[in-house]
Image (cartoon, rainbow, N blue to C red):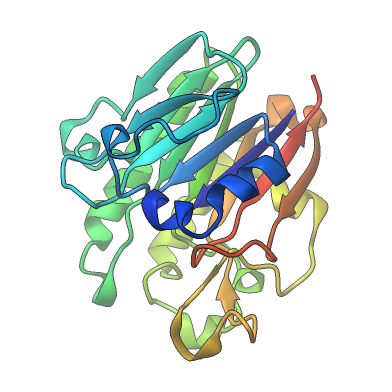
Length: 251
């Protein structure tokens, strides 16, 4: 089973940049999308019938939002964390399958000058609590734009970005808590190379020069470690300031 995650920075914009061509070429069993910036009624059923689609759109138009395409029908679907202050922005979808829960998440950005850091830290705590609740029932895979580079290897300029949004000590500690709780960073289980990024600024030719950040992850419960057979980053896929990331999972 191939599961892919991609922050598309606007699904309607992505459709104009050959998103459907990417979907056909990649042919994932499940594709998790973040930052849809849309509601389902705006897209007039443009997606292939081979996939079921599950949406969680933000209350605010043109903002945030998540979406999952799946070839396999889930046993159950839940939107959000069940916490009102977190659930207005459409950031979480949970699908339950036979042997695992799959969660896609678009983690809030701490913003310039860390204006939203306190909220972000509360989000991290509440999100991990929900993952642990699910994991006690059935192992969890969660994926998406976590808006943090965990280690210095995960961004091109760690010293210059220390205590900037996405590389503050507090956000990195939040990822430490994920690992301590028993979820491993699947990409780093297979690849310890530097220069492996999933997001680049649109400014100053950052992508062409590979001045990037790894912000997109698959975090997997230890109970599923032996089933993860590969993890990858599709740095060559354009259409967003992020690129797709994914894993393959044995049946």
